[in-house]
Image 1 (cartoon, one colour):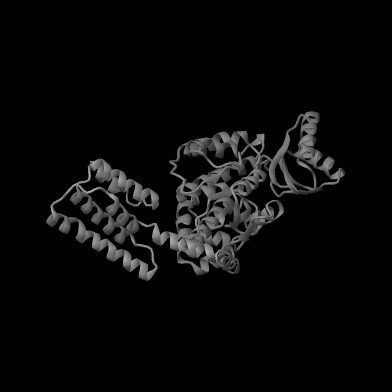
Image 2: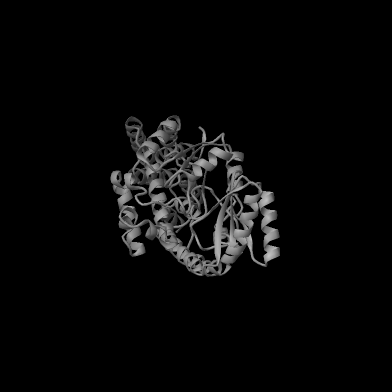
Length: 425
C-alpha cells in the first residue's frame, strides 16, 4: 500500500463559495457547519456563500471559515475513501486543521482558538506598521542576506516568514524595511508581489499577539494524536502533546518551514497526498518540490472522484485490513490463544464454547456483508470474550492487558474506555 499524507491550506486560500459542492451533497458537512455557526455565534454558511469577499477575508473570519471547510473535507475523505494517512500537515492556519483532524484539538475548541488567533492578528494589522511580500526567483541565502542588511541599515525588521517552495519565499516585517528589501531583490532579478495584508505575520513583530495567544492555548485540553502531525516550526512530527502550546505560539513569530515539511514527506516515502481545503496552493508546492508525490486537490466533486479512482487499490486493501483487524476478529484470536485453567468440561462447554460460537457467527455475518462491525456488535463480542476469560479462569490482570491490547490495536480505546475502567475495579 502506498503511503498517503493529508495536507491543509492556510489563510489566502479562502474565497466566496468555497466548499459549496460538499455542503450540497453532505448532510454531515451541513451539521458540522451548523455546529461551527453555533460555536462562533455567526452564520458561517451565510458568510461563506452570501457574504462579501472583504468580510470573508478579514483574518478573524477567514481562519474559522477555512478550518470548518477543511474539517468538513476531512470527514468527507474518511467517509468516502478512508485510507489511513501516515501523517497530516497544514500550512500556517492549516496546522490547526491538521491537529483537529488528527484528534488532538476538539473541533469546537479549534474554532474558538483560530477565531481568537485571527482577532489578535487583526489587531496587529490595524496598527498598519507591517507588510508582507512574496519573492519569486531568488535563492533563500540571497533573500536572508538582503533582509539582514536592510534590517541593520534601517533599524527596522524584515525576515523571511514563509519558506513555501524552491521558487517562492515570503518576507515580513516593518513596511519600510519590507519595501526596501523587495526593491533590492527585484533589482537583482526576482519577481515580487505584495500580499493584501497589513500585519507582518510570522515575524518577530507578532510577539505581543503570540504572548496573548499563548494564554488562550494554555487554557485548552489536548488529546492523543490519531496520526502524526508535522509542525510548521520544525517540519517534523510533534513528539508529544506538551509541544502543542509552545509550537503554535512560536508559529506566529517564526517562519513557516513548508520546505522542511516537503522534505519530511519525501523522507517518509509518501507517494500520494490530498489537499483538504479550497484552491490548490499546496498541491502546486508539492508539484514543484516533491515531484515523486502525486498530489490531488479535494474540494470539488470531480477532484474527489479523481482521488478515489487513484486510491482504488488502497481502498480495497484498507477495507480488507479493517475486516481482518477489528474488535470481533481480535476477540476470536484472544479467546483461542489465552491459556485455559478450567478442566470442568460441562462448564467449559457452556461458558466458552457457546459464546465462542456466537462470536464466530458474528464474524461470519461480517465476512458475508463486507461491512465493519457496529458499536453494538463490538460490544457483544467483548462481552462474550469477558465470559470466555472468566470460564478459562484467566487472572484479572491478564484480562485487563488483553482488553487493552485489543482496543489499542483496533483504535477503539476511547470508544470502550468504560470497559477498561470497569476492569480496573
